[in-house]
Image (tube, rainbow, N blue to C red; front, top):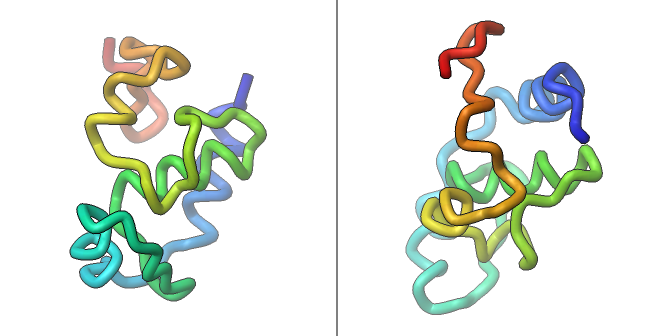
Amino acid sequence: DTNYYDFKKVIESQMGKKYDWFGLLAWPLRQSWQDPASWFCSELIAWAAMETKSPLVNSDSWRCSPQMLFDSVRLKKCDLIVKGKKIC
């Protein structure tokens, strides 16, 4: 299982990068317009999970939608942590 702090460290390594509008627009077309300088939200979460050896979806991170994350059987819905505190 991924340690919260490992996951947080990977996410924080991407701080300062912009929102990937082109990637978001390309997603419905199933085109990879990945820009290493930007992310869209579900793509970042899926990538970070893969980087920490705990993939949440069975696809490339650039193909991951918010619904795919929500539907993931690998994501424990009650393991939501905000500011270091478990909220459910």
